Picture: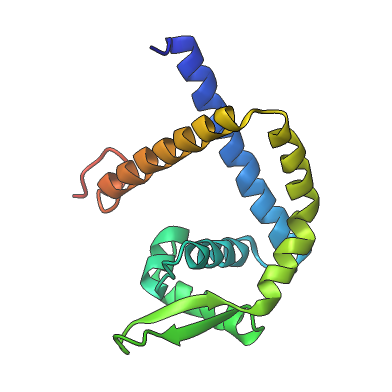
Length: 163
C-alpha cells in the first residue's frame, strides 16, 4: 500500500515530467521554426501515426484545443511546407487522416537524438524487471488520465457542468 507522502512525490514527479515534456515540445518548435501550437500538433500527429491510429482533423482539434477553423489553418500551414499529408481512408473515402511527411522524422531525430542517448543511459541503470514495472505503471497512469479526460471533455470547465 502506498503512503500519502510517496503518492504525493510520485504525482509531483509526473507533473514535473509533464512540464518538461511540454517545454521540450516548445523548444523543438523553436528549433525548426514552428509556432508552439504547430509543433504540438505535429507531435500529436506523429504519435498517433506511430501507434497505428492516425488522427482526423477533428481529433487533432480536440487534442490541441483549437476550433475546427483554426485547426484547418494550422493543417494548411503544415501541409504547405510538407510536414504533413492528408490521406483518404481506403475503406471509407469520407475519412481523411493526418500523416507526417518524411522530413519530420529527420527533424525529430536531429533534435531529440542527444536526449535519447541520455535517456538510454538512465534506463541502463535499472534492471529489466524494474523497467517492466515502470512500463506497466506508466501505461496504467496514462490509461487513468485518458479515462478522466474522456469524462471531463464536454463538461466545460473541469468539474463544472456547462450551463
